[in-house]
Length: 334
Image 1 (cartoon, helix red, strand yellow):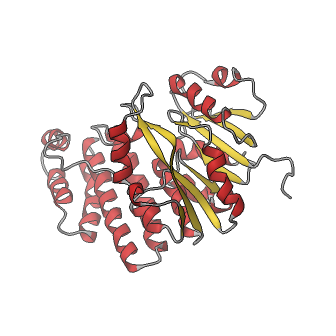
Image 2 (spheres, helix red, strand yellow):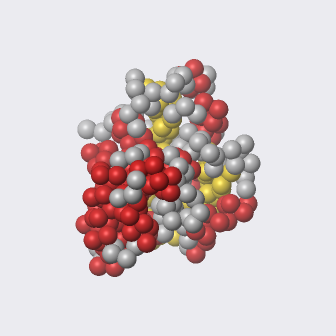
Image 3 (cartoon, helix red, strand yellow):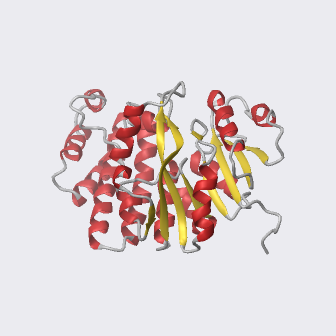
């Protein structure tokens, strides 16, 4: 039986080694005009526990949990979800923040339309110091095609959510908890937010879009997106493994042949990403099967062909060449 005293919304902030940003993120949640929520701050074994930062707010709606060791973002989030009591779930990256009307604006359509599974909005992009960058913001909206969307309900929203990636589930969406499958989310790894959007799409229910920018995404060198696009081999491996799981799930569940084809092509790209990460980690024999699998799915992909060739070259040369940035063969945005 559901708890009649449970808050309407569960807000989760996963955090790891970002105390300089966490306080701002928490404050942006507590400053919401919609006050019926609980906030769970879940720390993934940071070098220094942020418990003192959390407790400094002295707010009974805030709970803190901490993993004794680093488990990874998907496990960290899932542990917090198991504690969540709200009808709606929303997450906020520990380096991002919300405007004060974020919850009120996105929860209201979900309350009024029971056939909606998710509500999302546009968002600002800010620099490491928290200064909004207009050019970055417009570029992000254009890249993810939110600038083509009008306010309203989209059903189905597979292309919007998973092809265009217009739904930024990590910091700019609210989802009904009935959509969330914890056992699957664990396997999504660093693509956990992308997988949340998939879980919502898979229900066949609708999504509400608000064109207002109600959140702010912080771009800085220590973010996972920046690290995975760099020379960091382990980040590249994490990204590749997450992509293999997610895109296979997407392809199997996709409602049309065109979407199935798209996701299998993305699966091939993820397989190549994993292979390149393993090459950078000096594991050419382990990398080779992933690259061959990618070629079977996408036979004429230059990125995959070059990576496969490198797997047969002397290791020192292959490692050096796979780290080159120009030409930009070995990196691609998710």
